[in-house]
Length: 284
Image (cartoon, rainbow, N blue to C red):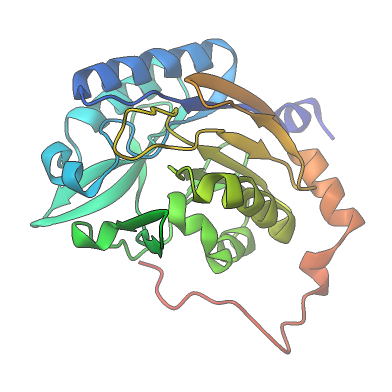
């Protein structure tokens, strides 16, 4: 492997676990500060949490919703450009054509918008005695896959509940993604039960790196996030994990290690496409 190729086979990922408040301006300022901190520690790709500019809840989405481009995405664009990084902008409530979406915007080192992912699978659950939440009461679902290229690897984007759908991850991996990022806000019921399990499952199933960015836990919020933003390697090991408080965590993504895992357990070459297949119905 040449020196250049070897250098490109490793890069640092920064995951920001932001304590989100009801003050949008403060959220944007703090997010920008932590993004710069991550870039200063050598992160080439930085991920923010779901709903990083507003509290998470059906009662907040309309109040905090913005057009894209808008105030929050302008701040993200400027931060990405200033730091020279790829910035996965968590998600914000987006208003478009009279509809609301839960949307992640990704910006390149030049500050340009690379992709806009609208959460495909809306978080509608009812666990009796524990939690009921219906995103569909206010939000509309997205209808497209979202991937972007970097000099390091191709990256696939999902938001929170999207991680529960293994087909999406399989398609991203099939299309060449080696890192999947999921800004997400699991709660105090689903978090301890499924948060890490789902990340490890998606990583092992597809032999990819998986990163999640959660808001920090705020016990006084109407929706209490689990926290524990993480990065999982293709072997299914958690290689970095935050606690419940605000933090920035890092992982060195090693694409040669990913290649080694795929060579050792070559499931990508052993799939029986003559018997089953996962395919894309709509590219978006």
